[in-house]
Amino acid sequence: MRHFLATTASRWLGILHAGRSLGPLVIRLVFGYFWLETGIGKVQNLDGFTQRFIGWGIPHPAFNAALSAWTELVGGLLLMLGLFTRLVSIPMIINMLVALALVVSSRLMGLDDYVEADEVLYITIFFWLLIAGPGKFSLDTLVARWLNIQTRD
Image (cartoon, rainbow, N blue to C red):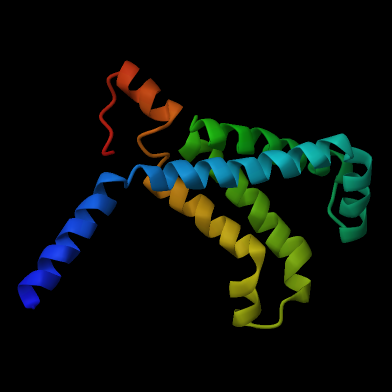
């Protein structure tokens, strides 16, 4: 029985390992599309988004609203393409840290509330992309190969 379990587990783990490059691709496509879509909505209604920044008391609301909206739009597009993935994760993390600190934190009472906040989840995913990279199926990988840069994928 032990041998059967070990053999079966090894087969399944081998199958999952063979498809390991699909994980980063799926995360980048879905997560990137989410940010592209939210960014487009904010850019198309920049006046309304600026008014929200004014209501939240964010300094230089017109500039910061535009910066945030365009960061989401361009960041989402680059994530989907897998281009500059690690680099673009940094401003996306900063964008979410600002949202968490200046907008969301006033509604959070304890550790459970912080852990359940969407922004913390987004920061975690961006952090993973920053550390793990875009995966094999990305423009970053193609550029690295073209430049003869060693990757660990």
